[in-house]
Figure 1: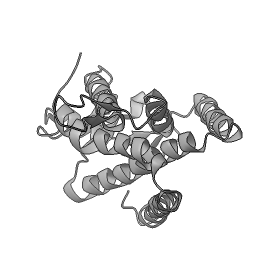
Figure 2: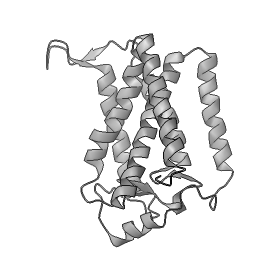
Figure 3: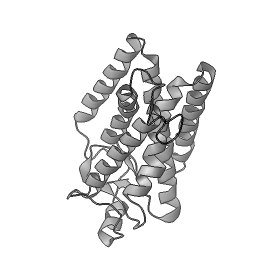
Figure 4: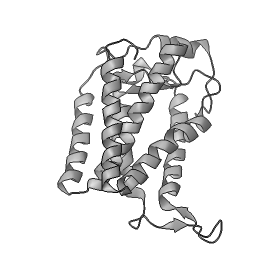
Length: 223
């Protein structure tokens, strides 16, 4: 069953209030297996010198972490985050809106999107039909992946065990698609083809910001 918008129900609010961030109560060995799979994928790409693929993965994953940090801060300020994961759906909750399994999936999502593009990443679609230059395959792939992920998130929000929780009635598939997933996949599809210096600066700045925010906000009890 798909859920397209938050329902603002008391049940949803109670589930969010019950979230135990970084509790090991539900921990199991799938945690280690998933980590091993991610390490294998990254090191395989590194050994094959597919640096652009690795860059795509890190670019999206860094944006993902910045979004999750912002979501947790919103939850701290307003009482409820834009999205949450439930205790019963995961082995370990990293931040209020992201569990271990979900985070590891996002660590690979950028690679998947990048590999789904044509080998000729300068390819453009609809040239001459909607304009002289058409639309970049990078943008088309980003929109396709964003739509797929937004629809799958609507499925998660509608699961009987409340795997994903949307509290606010105005938050749902459309804002998730536009404000969350489109930026994710734009990062994975465009950053690898930046000039080397700009690409390096983007990744260093992005991940430095992630580490600083986590190092400050977690001990402070904000997230």
